[in-house]
Length: 121
Image (cartoon, rainbow, N blue to C red; front, side):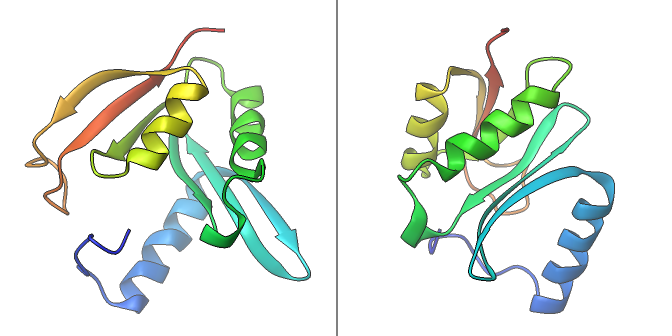
């Protein structure tokens, strides 16, 4: 998402993700030692779902989402930036619905975003 502002140093980003890993359940997809995609869930929230751009559209995101859903006690929730239309389309196809839209004033990036909720299974 090249339109997002650079708000933190690489060291701060690494520290943030180390904390996320420590408090979350996670899954990853690797090939030849490279991480192609990863998902993290904590307290009913899908906090991260990332697929390397070269590997998008090949089922990795769907497989990671399926793993996260398999362990979810209740429907997952997540935030997505309004400008990230491809992610919105992915989650809509997967059955997520918009619960709320914001103007971005409540997030660090100041980007409008959407709160999505998985429909009950």
